[in-house]
Image 1 (cartoon, rainbow, N blue to C red):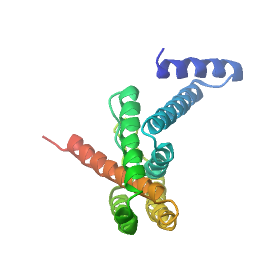
Image 2: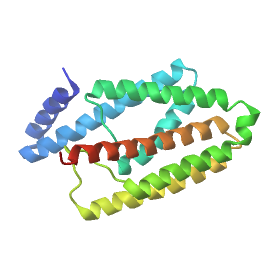
Image 3: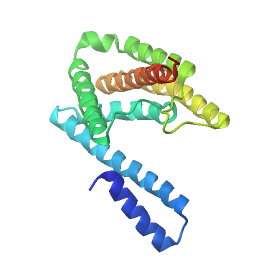
Image 4: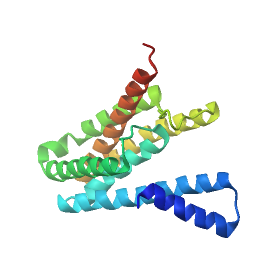
Length: 202
C-alpha cells in the first residue's frame, strides 16, 4: 500500500470516529501523508549518515536546509520514493564531506568564509525569490507570502550567525550546516527558474 493510500485510509477512519466533514478528511489525509513522508525521510537520511560514518553532520545539514525550505519552498521530484532516495543520498554526501574536511587545519582556518558565503547566498536568494511554490500547491494569499518571505530571510540571517559561533568547537557541524543552507538556497533558485519556464508563453 502506498503512503498516499495509507494516509487516506487512516484519515477516513479518524473522520468516521470523530464525525468530521469531508473537507476535514482531505486536510487530515494530507497532514498524515506529510507526517509519514517526513518520518521516513528522517530515518532514511539518518541511516545514510550512519553508513558514511557521519550521522551528526548529515542530520545537521538536513536540519539547516529544512529550516529554510519550510518557508522558502523548493522543488519536488516525480514521486515520494525518488525524493526520499535523492535526499538521503545528497545529505549523506554532505555529511561525509563535512566530517572529512572538518578535520583539516586549512579548512578549519577558512570555515568563517564558507559560512559567510553560504549565508550571503541563501540570504540573497531568499530575499529575491522566496517563497517559491508548485502549480499544484500555490500560495494565493499575499499576506501569507509576505510572512513566509520574512521568515525565510530571517532564517537565512540567523542560521549563519549560529554556525559562526559553532565553527571553533564543532567545525564539521558548521561545515555541514553551511552546505545544507547553501544547497537549499540553490534549490529555491532552481525551483523559481523551473517555474518561470513552465509559465512562459510559447
